[in-house]
Amino acid sequence: MKDILIKIEDNTVGPLTESKLRWLIHQGTFTLQDLVWNERSGDWARAATLVEIAELFDLSGKAPVQQARLYAVASGKGGVGKTVITASTGVALASMGHKVIVVDCDFGGANLHTVMGILQPETSFDDYFGTKGAPLSDFTVETPITNLRLLSGSCGSLKLANLKYAQKQKFIRGLKKLNADFILMDLGGGGDFNVLDFYLLADEKLLVMNPDLAAVHGAFGFIRMALLRRLKRTFKDDPSALDILNDQEANQPGRIVRTMAQIREKLSDASHDADRRFQSAVNSLIPRLILNKAQSKADLDEAISIELAAAELLSVRVDVLGQVAHDPAVEKAVKEFRPFVLHSPTSEAAKDLTDLVYTQILGKRGIRERIRKRKWRQAFDHLNEIYPEVRLVDAVPVAELVQGRREQNSAILK
Image (cartoon, rainbow, N blue to C red):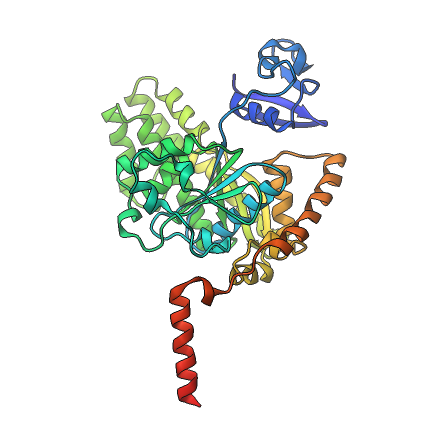
């Protein structure tokens, strides 16, 4: 099943794939009493009355156990706040009782652990790739938040900065076996092949950008590279189609020479069944855009411009999830090694992100859910109290060395 339309509390949601509908059922967001659009009758019908929908539930009205929902968090350039968004999203989901694993997929330049306040993780991907047979779950580490675990990358590791094919496949197999409700992959900035491949692997593809011009261009460029990567894989068995795709990429790197609609026409002339394969590749992308560091509601226009340009030039649908305010509290939280939803739960940035998680990621809407959301936010105050403080000098040897040099210099100056 595909292109399923449903109604939840009078709100139309979709079109959805069967996988996404199963996830809403698993969350308890969609029930047997909710409505589904029945194309045969041309009207809305209760889910319980449609055999193909009802079969997605078991007899108790709950969805069967399924794999974790895999989220990729990417950006077209560094410095847009992707990692702090990932950390606080993980905290928000875990605080609601979901089992969450945050994964630092910037293998050679990891910093997710520092944002989480875990400056020296007990294990990292260095250990995982250096060990034979041990499951990926053995290398997760506890965080101060119940239900939230971390898989840490390696900082400054040349051997992991560019994964070999066998390492990448081992990692993907390990990811699929992790026991969690949500797995959040914090990808490296930019669009190298590893980043694009992990992005395309995910069930949900988040893309973080800022309203400044460089970030807007970077986000659009990332979507274009991801689509080209997907298309090349789709047509990897067709040399004539690959020639067309490679020519488009080589003509004017970073510029649009032909729209994807025009490329689609050329593919259709050169390749059998190209239309169906092209549309399948496009439908599997659908980036979900988060505008970070927004200073006004008008900044959301930059995200909408990406949505329109992607549709017109790339034939790609982009969902704009919302914006997170530019907030000094976020920078302060990073300096104190604490996710900003805990450090400053009443800040504008924290409110924006928790709204986004609650309504867009979890799909919880309506009056009852707004009341529950307020109670949920109150829990962050308690979590902030129990979250351990980090003293950099005590935690990291290099910081102790730097502090010692500063004290020596200060004594000399005196």
